[in-house]
Length: 81
Image 1 (tube, rainbow, N blue to C red):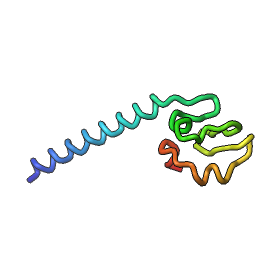
Image 2: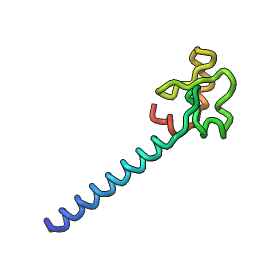
Image 3: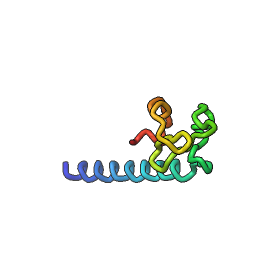
Image 4: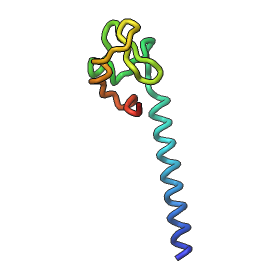
């Protein structure tokens, strides 16, 4: 049984490493413009005139926090906040 437990630990470790590598590739291949908007924002119409996105994913309208734009934001890259 100890042999099987060791194989399971190795298998889980390999899957964890692969997941981390895939997440890093996705995060570092994303193209962000000068307003902090990425391709997802442009495709779904979130990137409008006067809107910017901060480092943490918060949307600002003309430099002020925009409640309605943040409330209906559905960008999966900024869903962790």
